[in-house]
Image 1: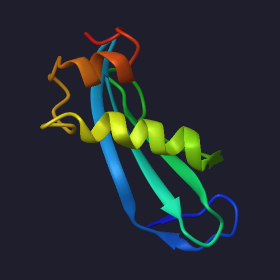
Image 2: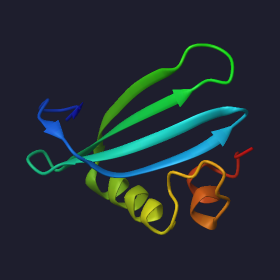
Image 3: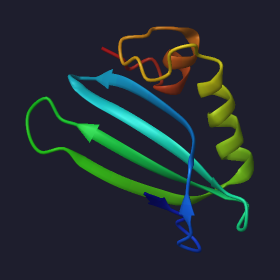
Length: 97
């Protein structure tokens, strides 16, 4: 369970997106805390070579998080790491495999 990076309350995932960058699969999950009005971002990295990792970032402003969630929601397959739609390309900065 992802916790708010500010108040440590348990959060549900608002949106997630996966992509493959240089052989590593990234899945970024955005969670919004209604109490704090901020996002927490969990980044899961499955490495092609090496150990997997999970990192948590935040707090992230509502405006910045809302923009990323909106971008994710514009893709019909956000968890498809092989998708090359405009949303995936914009989200991962044109660095997808």
